[in-house]
Length: 425
Image (spheres, rainbow, N blue to C red):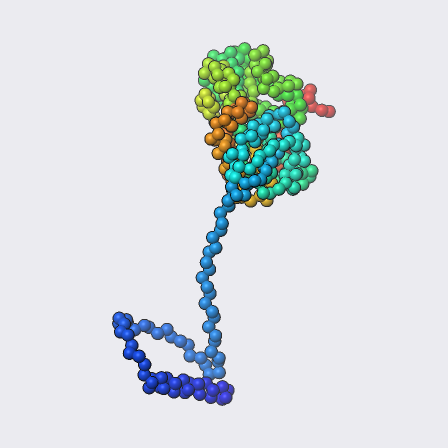
């Protein structure tokens, strides 16, 4: 201890002597500076004898933010070929709509890449390829007839959830409109002033040839308890609306029009007729020959080129929370979207945003595309944007397992009640 103290003392004396020498040597005349108030000295701790002077830590440099380069979509897509793959066979609606769309998209995608269209009608294989093998650079786009939430719950498609894909957009409004032909002739003199819920609890509609809503589905849908059949029958039963339900071999749009004309049925629940009739039958809506009695959902039925829908949404008129929850579970997940575009899981947000913006702009601004697409689809495109579609996918996927269970239970009950001949023993 003595040795260390002596060394420290000698250092102090030597330092003092050096200061005296420097003072004696003098220096240049100091430059006058403005008088400043004396600075307050910061107290310095005195080291105890024998404690080495600590080495000051080096100052931490202030980090300088490195600018993140913006994504250059035009440079990324320029010279590339983008393949749009339909999960449908040639000749159907999904195929035809996809080909029309693809023919216009090169000029709207940044960099003007080449756009080609292909088909893979094996839906599980198309889904699995898009989920596991397709390129993630924006050059492969899945074009699907429906969102196919069920694929995310099946072993064959490796339980790859639909929400793991990057949603680009959807082209057609998926909402179902409850559409009735010749309401006054079939339901009664005041039928053009009512909505579906106005007939709740009535023995009949008060007049007309049918005195009830006559509706039909295909035998296969009835026997299998298809969600649309179950949702329709469940709504009629829950609201206690007068109705009769029929099963036929074919109940496509052409068959519906024929059965309307013959008087076999008066109602259908579809997402296309409301948008198509101002073009195909321009006098039916203004003359009251067709009326929308409710929007079956899921979502808001929008105006067509003639005007606004006659009635509001069925979800606002269900009698109780329990039955409404069942209806939503049956109706919403299979129908929340139609004709949708997806990028493989793992595709970057920048690529997805760029392509989504391109498709949305095309379907909102390209008059030739809109006209030709409407001529094929039977309705004016109603584009679902990326944010809305992504949120809807997450919401419907979260309730899909319950939806399957509820649809099976209610489908079995309703089929046994109204169509016992189609129940397998």
